[in-house]
Every structure is written in structure tokens, then in C-alpha cells.
Image 1 (cartoon, helix red, strand yellow):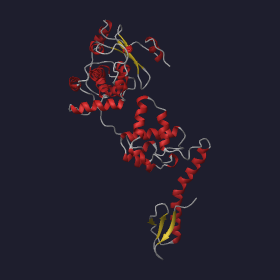
Image 2: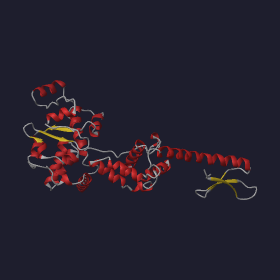
Image 3: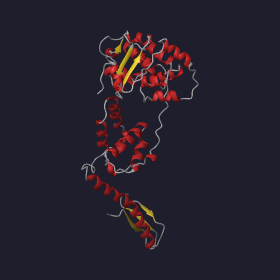
Image 4: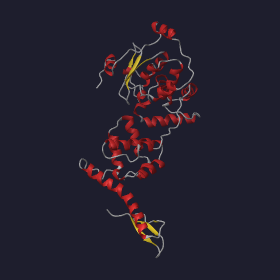
Length: 358
């Protein structure tokens, strides 16, 4: 294997330098003694040779089971991971793959990528770049396209998300008052009352409503789990204004989630409302639930067991005035509280809805 550095001296009897054949730069070895300079030069060449040797070994090993290992680029990996996604998650990955910061590694061979090249990409990017590049890196490891991590887990820069907050009742009411489009106004109303994801609410159909039992049941797009929510008078008032057949929001159902979010943000900014998004309705629902003593298990069922909004609201050390167990039991006995039946599996829940899980 060719040495990267060679010995160089600018004048007879002068100091020896290490000449870098890749960059053309010269660095002093700090000695005029040839033997000492040669030892230092050999050590430097060896320090650069070992990673290259390891790379050649890795290529030879991986090539035995994967012929494309020597040519696969980060763009190829992006295309591959996008194919494993669907729905709104796929949309997010498609947008993330277009980030300008990724241009620095897009055409680079995965197996030949150095840590400093990924760090440079991360430095030029955003929080989204960090999140998606880390997942892409782990995807490559799982696919056996990398023999070992380029950046060890402990050295990845910490992801610092901007703080998110719930939308307030005053802000929500202002949005409703100023919204002239009936479909959007009803959509925002159900976001406030149901706390579901914007995609799930936009995709609601009249057939999801069980009027005799006053429940709404739908399959969460992100997780595939079933949501079954009892509704009261406020939600009923909104539902009565909507279609009795087919999509409840025929236009918004066709709009990409990113575009719905942008439209909402623009409306908020026009009203002077800062720092909220459609997801803020989920945070608001979770915080309202906690404040009134709504059981966490019920909130998890309503928003989804893995909902960050639930975890954040119920993890806060806020002072909450909880109802006594006695009064809660009394209300339950009188039918004033809708009790969540114990379900052992998704198939049980589906059976009660007259559905089957695939």
C-alpha cells in the first residue's frame, strides 16, 4: 500500500518535513536527524495506513455477501429507507432526503465515509438532519452495509428540539372566530376536542361514527392501532354539521400533512399567535386531561400509548387538583364517567368494533 507521507527537507542540513501527497501540505517533524525523522515519518504513515487496511478488510468481507458494497452511496441508502416507509412518515423522509446539508455526502460511498465528513454534514444541517442522518446511519448498520459505526453512539451530537407548547383555549377560540372556511373551522374544533393527529382527524369518515353509542372509532395511520373515543355534547355539535356519508373533511383529506400544517401556521401568524402548530392541539388535549384528573390510562388510549403529548403532560410536576376516588367511583356508578373496558389485545378491541385486524 502506497505511503501517504514522504520525507522532505527544504535545504541541506535543515529540518525534515513530512510531505502529504494528498493535500500537498508540509509539516515540520521538528528534527534535523534523518534517522529520527524517518522513525517519525513511518509512525505517521502507519497511523493512516491502519484505517485504510481495516477498510480493505471490511470491503473484502462484505463483498462476499453484498456485491454493491463498494459502490453504494448515501443517496442509495436514503432511497432504500424511504421504500420501507409509508404514509406521513414516508413524506417526512422524502422531505428530509432533499435537505441541502446532505449534499456533502449524498454521492459519497458509504463504506469510505469518515467521521469528520458526517460531522461536517451535521454542522451544516438542522435538528432534522441530525435525527434523520442518525437513523440512516443505524439503518446502514442494520443492513450490514457498514461493518461498524462511523460515529460511536456516545459521540453523536445531542438533538436539541425547540420547546413545544400547547395551544391555549383563548388562542383556539380566536382561530375559530376568525376562520371563514367552514371545513377548516370544524377541523380545528375536532382537533381541540379529540386530540388526535391531524392526519387521523383529516381522514375521519361519517362511517367512523357510532351514533347510538356516541363513539368515534378509527385506525391510527401512524401505528395501525385502533382508537375508540366516546363523545359528549360539544363534539356532537361539531359532528352534526358535517357530512352524513363519506369523508368528514373532503378537501383537507386530500391535502398533504405538511401543507395542512403550513396553512395552519400561516393563519396563526396572521393572528399574532406564535409557537404553535397543529400538533399543539395534542399537547393541549393531554394537559387539559391531566388538569381535570382524567386517568392517564384513558389519555393513553385516546392519544395513543406512545404519544409524547401524554408522556410530557403527565410527567410534569404540576400541582393538579384531583377528584377523590370516592367521587370518581360514585360518578362511574351513576354512569357519568365512561369506563374503559379491559382489553387484552388489539383483536379484542377490533372485535368490539365489528372489525378484524390484519
